[in-house]
Amino acid sequence: MATLQDLRRRIRSIKNTRKITKAMELVASARLRRAQARIEQMREYAETMRELMAGTARASASVRGIPLLQRREVRTVAIIPLTADRGLAGAFNAQVLRRSFALERSARAEGAKVRWLVAGKKGRSTLNFRRYKLDGAWTGFTDRPSYSDAQAIAHRLTELYAAEEIDRAVLVYNEFVSALVQRVRAREVLPISEELLETDEEERREAAHRGDFIYEPEPEQILARLLPVYLETEIYRALLESAASEQGARMTAMRNATKNAGELIDDLTLEMNRARQQEITQEILEVVAGADALA
Image (tube, rainbow, N blue to C red; front, side):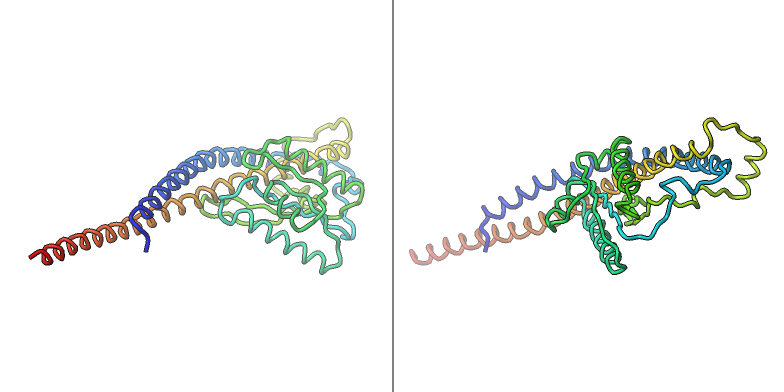
C-alpha cells in the first residue's frame, strides 16, 4: 500500500501535469481560431481560381496537350500523407498513416508501384522506420504552413509527373469539420481532372453577358500556367485543413487529459485521506493499548 508521502508526491506531480495540459489546450484553442480564419479566406481564393481556369478553358481550342491534364495507365502511384511535426494530438497522425497504408495495399493489389512523399516529422519517422524510400519530405511548418511550403510540394509532384515517374498522386490528410471532428480524406491531385474546367449553364450565361475576352497570350498557354498554380492552391488548402485539424485534435486531447488528471487527483486525494485516517486510528489504538498496559 502506498504511503502518505508517496500519495502526496503523486498528487503534486499530476497537478503539475494538469497545468501543462491546460496550457496546451488554451494554446491550441487560440491557434485553431487563427487556422479557421485562414481556411475561410483560402476557400474564396480557391473558388475564384477555379472560375478563372474554367473561363480560360472555355476560350481554349483544346486542352488535350497540357501535361497536367493528361491521363495515362496507372503504373506508379505517389502517396503524400500530411502529418504533424508533433504528437499529443490524439489519433491525428495515426489515422492519416493508417489510411495511407491502406491506399498502398490497394495500389499494389492492382499491380501499381507506390512512391512516397511526406509532410511532417511524425509521418517521416514512421516511413523511415518501415524503411521506405522517400522522394520528398518536408518538415517544420505543419502547425503554420505558408504558401511557399505548398509550392515546394507541388513543384516536386509536377517534376515527377512530367517525367512520367508517377501516373497518379494522392494527398492524404485530415479535413477540418469542427474542433471535435476531423475526417480523413484521400484526394487525387494529379492528374488534374478536366471536370474542374467545365462550367454549368448559369456560369455560361454570365460569361456571355459579360462578353468575350481577348487573351494574350493564347488561352491554352494561360491555362498551362494556371494549372500548376491551381495545384499549389489545392495543396496549400489541404495543409491549412490539416493544420486546423491538428489544433482541434490537440485541443480535444489536452482537454480530455486535463479532465482525467482532475479525476485521478480526486481519487488519490480520497485514498490519501483514508490512509491518513488509518494512521490516526492506529496511533489512537497504540496509545490506548499503552495506557491499558500501564494500568
